[in-house]
Length: 407
Image (cartoon, rainbow, N blue to C red; front, side, top):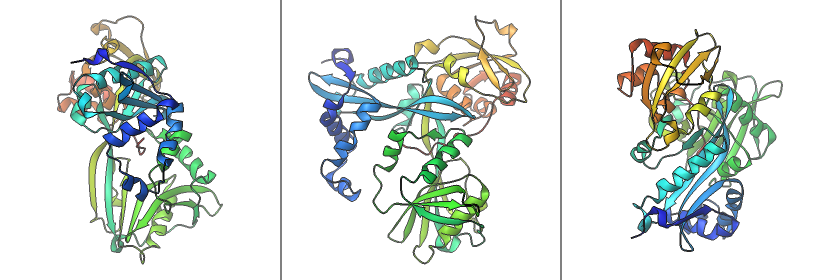
């Protein structure tokens, strides 16, 4: 029986398109009927993958000439507390069943994460098919998705705004520029490049609609992407730059009350919407959505921002990483005036304001704002004195990431 080292690994090219597509279709059980229902015809889905192989890093494992496993990384940028952090969004992770359990996927992951480190992408994201599996490899939950259902009789009757809503084309500049403005203002949001926008629309039906809210000065301030099907309005995404736009979009939704029985949508900012509704007795369901992993601790701290009004503090971090050895070393980080830096050399614990021992996954969820140090301490996910926990929560920002993309 071959082990993982016996197989050949290389990056895929356009010549591997058929093998790449066949493995995806088999692993995720995408049938011809699924493609037809989503509006795809013939080889359109296969041809749509050409940009992926050209602009993403897709690593494949081969048994002879046969592609048996693959691991793709989309290069993107994310808003990190107002700064820009290069990230890799992991996707298309799949292996033929007869090749599972041989360590192939761990080998592909390690090589891909190493490449991300080499190309200065200190953070990776993914949508997990198995949270326990990825946790064992150093990943942790960093964001939630809240799904809601609002009956037509529960639509906010008082939602009114002075502006107006206009339906636009999928590629309308007002729509795409709105997302860029929103991403600049919201921690965790991904900046969508052309590849991300292609993925955004990949499985949408032709009658999916984009509606933009404009102020009385004709300035776009919010949008929603939706589909009406079988008396249900399905909201794919709804964002607003101010509360006026939010009210205007709900007013637009209410204008459809004679056409629909209910509205179903998703919210990604970590806060339920029931409190904002006139009738808050709606159904909401929260579930983990995106997992993250710091690939290079020192590189990530170099991009990290903290509270600008907090007193200067020096913390010694002792990180345990079961998968990427280069993170397994103590680091002393100085937080000061909204930024931080890793100090040269290894400072002794007595020279610091506190020390904390934690796993790479716990560090990821802490620094991205999904959980506070106090919460993680209560869950026994980190080891630190009470004073150090309080110091961390005074200096760190605590805003849950807004991640709505599923690449």
